Image 1 (cartoon, rainbow, N blue to C red):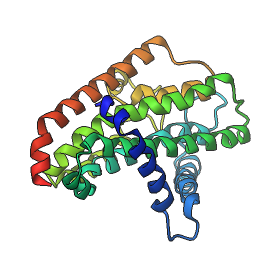
Image 2: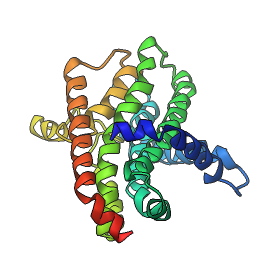
Image 3: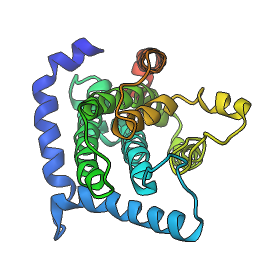
Length: 259
């Protein structure tokens, strides 16, 4: 799989930049929609949960808005990547029929676009952090690395889903529903600190859990994630990519025939 990615690296980079240029082509604000979309969602959540519902992060002296965005930004890009990545093969059916480009290349292109988007979102965390008087320390330099790890987790999932979606078109609606539900099983807009120990243990089995928490660890707590968190994150990445690669290999010929 990674050998194919290296072999087609020039195609990947070329199509990556083309996709970035044309994604918002024809709109008045163009590239700025990369920034406007997440900021609007954060504004809605911040107003609702700080003014109307009065839910707080539970951290001492931590602004809820910063707590929210440090979890919400990674989740938004992760969820968007799963949606677009799961459609990568179907939407590039013409190229797959006429060329020998393997399916994982189209999914990896969505990985690159999502990584670029998430890096922009993380840069937006800097002024937000300064506004709420949370210092930016050297630990924040780990955020781009954490972004890469989170999207590698998503890459394995998207690769499997992209192949299955060709065989089962209803997967589009199923994925959309699952992503809506999945958000509420993670401590994105609330803290899990006050939950019963049993429920906390169940939540920690959720694959993105430690990734989301690690962003907050480096940004808000100003320390690197614990060794246990790193081990669990790498375990989920290896499992996700392993399963995704196997499914892609098993279904390659069937997917090609259906396209």
